[in-house]
Image 1: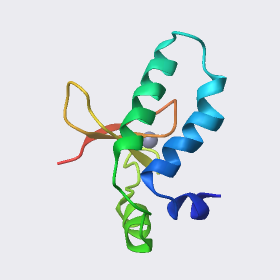
Image 2: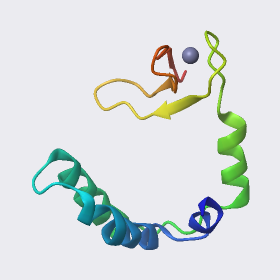
Image 3: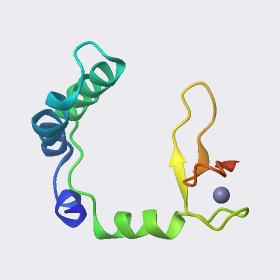
Image 4: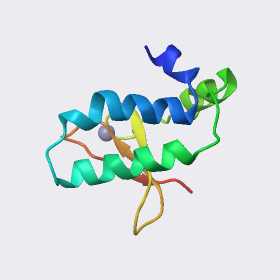
Length: 98
Ligand SMILES: [Zn+2]
């Protein structure tokens, strides 16, 4: 599944969001508003498929939590710089990207 998604353009991903995710969301909830916004943005995007190199880079860059050894996931900061966050709920170790 993930491999197939890598091959799609941003606009096609937006279409999938609209077809599969959007109908699952509550009317006027923040999830729906955010999802709608993302779909609108993806539809105007000219971004193409994710290349194999990009996909591999993402895997290579994924660091491991120094506290518990779990994977860290990149979060894009809204009112703060981007940061890595440990996937394990009990840990939630946070590390700034730079
Ligand atoms: Zn951790």
